Image (cartoon, rainbow, N blue to C red):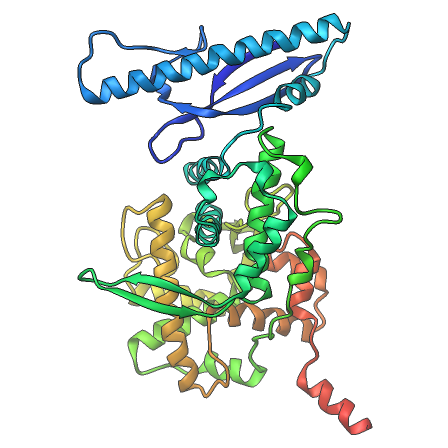
Length: 440
């Protein structure tokens, strides 16, 4: 059995500090446990497993850092004593422990790891590895959790049981007031309704994933885990949403009718282009560049992986043939709009953005585009509000109505599971319902 205390440089908190973890290696298997302390990685002595203490430094910042690192070093010395005691206990019992057995024994009386600290470190890790959208999901859920429980930052994982989660869900369903800070410093109070089932599911899935990760890394509490078998049922929250797709005739009119207003014409062409691109999502469309164009079998294709699922296992890239209609729109954008860098579409409007700033910019452009789509929908007398999602749903329904197999539609949509595709397609066309009424 080998044990060592190391620092996780890939996970930083908002102050740039990295957590320490205990690594156990036995019989070719390895387990690690994150410890409830963090320090400056630049001062970590990996050989001796302690933080350097700077001598002769009188600056306030250096003194504070030295004091913090002295306290951590004292804590680490205590943990090494515990480690040796546990190993002697196994030896006296004539047990050659596995890495899991050792970590379980170590955690038995030391499960005090703050939930919010682990949560914030995970968010920071997601941002640093480019998972900006996923990080935003965890940030939103952490914000709601703190609104629900003013003492959330002092909670430990064993405090999060099924009763706590049920109270959290009750909070989500109740109306509440929020304070909004306006320009000039004024505060505005806004009444918010309780959230619906699908939004509750969004928060619970993030909460569940965070608890699962904590258990996986050895700081969570399996005994109080509130989800899973006999726990809080997230699946029961799902509500079927209204299918938002356009009739064939309406889509044909939008394809064929140019707008006199330049902004609405750009909006119309972008909506149609995303339809031709198999209902590509707005964020994926924003990130397409000329580098995504490849020549295959004598033709041109756009090949990309969805931002949402690109890191998932066995995810295949989506391949879009650049047919004549799609090529005409791409050429129009090239000639009539200001494309940033080598972008294919006029969505990103600022140069040099990356990471979180790029994500926030695209979200802002998404909101603006939907405002323009709303006006476009009024111009074409669309009954329901026109959004970028409508092009995606319309594309999927159009393919289904033309007898394209659902397995193919699922692949074109970039879904990881065909069950997701069914939520798009499991609805009767109104014509079918009309025919059913005639039979009666």
